[in-house]
Image (cartoon, rainbow, N blue to C red; front, side, top):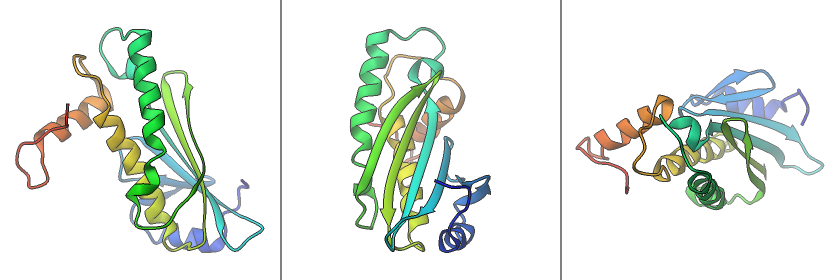
Amino acid sequence: MTDEIPERAERAFEGHDAFERDGDGYRVTTTRFDGHVTADETDDWALAYRLVVRMPMLSAAVDGDVGDAVEGGWFDTLERRLGDAPSVTRADVDLDAVTLTEDADEAVAAFEFEFGNADRAPDVAKAFAEYVEGTYVEGVVPGYDYEGVVADLMGKAASQGDDGSRGGTPL
């Protein structure tokens, strides 16, 4: 991807309230994790998008130690579930690639897809970023004392259901 954002993608992301310009792309503002999306021209009419979401590894989100087997199982499960991201959009989106890698104390999810409707692409990228956050929260392992952004997300999930009543995660 180049540093130039195609004009139609730039116009769509600039006009969407879930994104702010950030260097060569746009930062997702509706999630607590660091989400960044870029767009590039293709040889076809569609644009190529890449969304990267950075989140703490399980061991970086807890106060204490996490065994290698626990973190490995958590990571593998998160990786498998991320492939279901297109199911949360109201658009027909096929992922060209979805990867989850470890970078120091962060898990880095990357979604690559081509999409022909630049005006709807911000909604797709937003849905993917929010899916990552929700999937992460659903997958936290019980029995640990979470801290930082994950503790905040867990507290929010436990204190608010859809109707404002006390709810919680399936855990």
